[in-house]
Each structure stands twice: as C-alpha cells, then as structure tokens.
Amino acid sequence: MKILVVGRKSWETDALMESLQELRHVAYQSDFPFLFFDFDASGSRVFDSKNKVDISHYDAVIPRAPGPYYPQLQALVDYCMGFDIPVINEEAIINMPRYSKFYQHMAFVKHAVPFVPTFACGIAKFTEIMGVQGYPCIIKKFEGGLGAGVKIARNRLEADYIMNQFDRTDDVLIQKYIPIERDYRIVVVGNDVVGGMIREKPENSHLTNATGIDPSYQKPIGQIPPGMSALALQAARALKCGTAGVDIAIANGEMYVFEVNLFYGFRRFSEVTQFKTAESIVRLLEMNYQIRGR
Picture 1 (cartoon, rainbow, N blue to C red):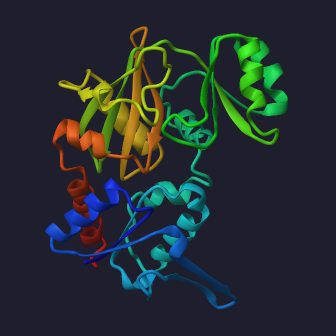
Picture 2 (cartoon, rainbow, N blue to C red):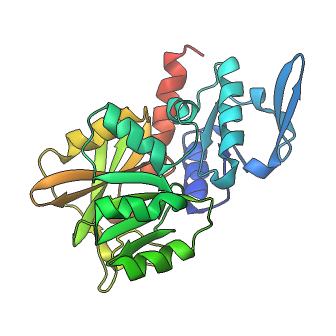
C-alpha cells in the first residue's frame, strides 16, 4: 500500500514511517501546509505539493495533529472518501466541526459518558457563570492540548487575572475543580484497549499532562482499574474514533473522562508500556483497507 503520513515531523511521524516500511508499505510523509486545495465548479482536488502527487495517488492516510489546519484536514478526509481511501479517525474528523473540547462535551452528553460538571461560555458571561459555578474551578480554552490554556482559579481575584489573559472573543470551558493526584491515559485502537499509563501530578501543579513535565511522573499502569477499559471504549466510540488516547480520572470513587485525544502523542506511552503503538495504528489502517475490498 502507498500510505501518506501527514503532519508536522515528530517522533510519532518517524515511528509511523518506520512501521510502514517494516510492514513493507510504501511510506510518504508530508505536512498540512504542503497540501494544495483546488476548488472550482467541476469539483475539488487536493494535491500534495511535497511529494508532487494528487491525494488520490495514495491508498490510505494517517493524519497527525493538524493544529490550525483542522478545516484543511476535514477537506482532505472528504476528498479521500470520494475515492474510498481510508483515513485514520475519518468518522470522528468529519463529524466534529472543530477539534475542540466543546464538541467533545456535546458527544459525552449524548452518549452518557461521565465527565466533570462543565459550563461553556464567552468571556462576557464569565462573571455570571461563576456566580453559579463557584471556586475553585478550572478554566480552559475550547481548543489546545498538553495543558495549554488550562488554568486553576481558587478565588475571584485569580479568576479575573486569568480571564484578562484571554482575548475578549475567546470561548472557555469552566469546570468544577476535582482534586486528584494522578490521571490515566488509556489507549484505544479499534475495538480494543491496548494499554494505559499513570500520569502523576507534580508538586505545586494542577496538571498531569503539561508540556515539560518530567517523564518520571508517567509510569506503567500495571492493572487497569475495573470499569476503566469499558469507559475508555465508550468515550472513544462517542466521538467515532478508530484510535484515541482517553484521559480518565478517579475522584470520590467515581470515574470521569477529561478528554478524548484523536491525535494523541504516543512516544511516552510506547516507552512506558513497550507497546508498538505505531504498528498497531498501521494494522488498524490495513484492516480498514481490507474491509473496503480495495
């Protein structure tokens, strides 16, 4: 198969390229800025200018984190569907208008996935909402990962300071603060939970997944707590994911899903668990390709 890995070069894209080659596929790498979209009355065309081929040249596509190029990723998936070219997480990408925590919570509600009580609002409504929510609380932007834009407000003074750092047009999620010492990253591939790791919270931090956290805080999970695998699968299916990193916490004896990551980084997970994550994603793509009879 001729398979395109599209996204900014990283440890994960390198691992995927290596796995593709080991499994005797023809591997190509590109990035979203290299994609050229041609729209006219007769239809659309998506051209990979880095490799100088139309996207229809490929048999399958593995997208990585698109960042601001999410609309382009959706257009890419739509184009691939016209040629019956499988794309990892294609259903989730097409069904989510924006890759944001807001749309994830809509899916959680629809599919009865347990999550932390949450309000969503514009900055202008913040004071009104906080009269209902109370403190302490977590304030986070709709979009972003690795702890970016996630703040804790213990009182009104801290909340005002945080909100003044946002643009007046920003939308935010406001969540009840649940004190935890750790959370769990559970990785789903296809219909299976392939493993998990514990992410301990560093001292003087409210985050378990921020950029720059010492890898020693991320450890093998040993045995996944009862019910957590089923919850991870439920959350991934709520978003129609083929593969996902599901973040789950336990507080007061209850499990909560924090987030479902479609483009999860799997370097530390692979190192901690010794699981061949890249290979499992390629195998999932092979299965989807065979199901379509291509």
